[in-house]
Amino acid sequence: MLRIQVLGPGCANCQKLEALARQAVAGLGVEAEVDKVTDMREIMARGVMATPGLAVNNRLVSTGRVPSVSEVMTLIANVLAEESPG
Amino acid sequence: MAAERQAAVRLVAGLGLVALAWAGAYAALRPLADALTYDLLRLSRDSHLGSSVNFFLYDTPKVLLLLTGIVFLMGIVRTFFSPESTRRLLGGRREGVGNVAAAGLGVVTPFCSCSAVPLFIGFVEAGVPLGVTFSFLIAAPMVNEVAIVLLFGLVGWHIAVLYVALGLGIAITSGWVIGRLKMERHVEAFVYEMAVGQLDSEERLSWADRVGRARQAVREIVGRVWPFVVAAIAVGAGIHGYVPEDFLADVMGKGAWWTVPAAVVLGVPMYSNAAGIIPVVEALMDKGAATGTALAFMMSVIALSLPEMIILRRVLRWPLIAAFIGVVASGIVFVGYVFNLVS
Image (cartoon, rainbow over all chains, first blue to last red):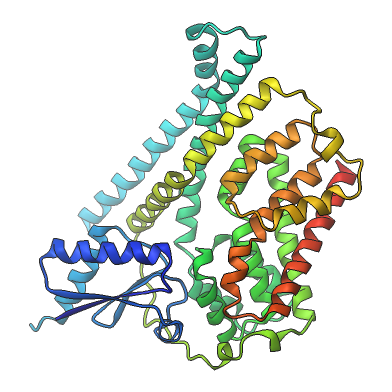
């Protein structure tokens, strides 16, 4: 199953991005688990210096900004396309 | 290839049209405001009400237009910088040159005070000296496009230029002084032990992406600050027409030595963005407050805020936070005095 993570200590932008990620998942009609990473150690270990960060299946696809819903959908679709066999 | 070129032509043509429309609207501001106030509403040019209404009808669209234009341009500039690239540029750099570079990069690197902590850790990990990191953290919120536009639009270009120059000056010297104080041991130990990952790859952006991001910045920033701007100009317009010119000269004029430090101390617990505070500053100066006092107040409100200190407390111990506040506040007081002397 698709795993989407929002990395950030819980600021307003992080919450916005989490909501957007859920909308994007619903829009794409895929099954996904959306969760938050708030532990500063893990955020830093993933190389995120500007929050919020967005990771799809453990791949960081965006940092330091809140992309639009359609952009989040594209980012998710890109990862799915690259991972699907053939 | 042909399709790509077509898209590029469309992008340039679109931007050109928008720029033309922007310039046209800007040129039409004065005649439009005059026509609305004096012909349509039939207010007298000499009345308080006429002067206030005209001020409001001219200043509001002017400042909003300027804000939109500059936020868009800065949005484009910011797509060329990232915290990662800035960290690389500053890593291992000597103090002095490093402080200057950090203050300059603080202006153009996308920054939100909510990511001050990860940014701080990332900088320290990359070997950016503590004082250089502070130069960045001081310049980033203080010298921002909203402050510059509002000062330019509401107070005048010379004050806007001075604000930028002095803001950078304070960021550079304060960072340098903090570096000299050798306070590295007052950074929480875990900061040095933390493993910081590398991003696998930098994004490659097309011009269409950059324009898209800049438009998003306009929607986000202008969408957030416009109510403050309108409300503040309305208040300013009210003062403009009614309150006597040197109403504040006694309290906030050049005379008393204590006004500058008092303005700075008053500014620290106040937390506001540039949009909220500049119209107040404009009104203060309009009514006889000394330039240096008004600017010191504004810098203190924007650069030193309690919420940011509380966020930074997660990585810094109190002695370092106190030094940070003390050094920056002294710099602002100094700038305020110099301003009052020369203006």
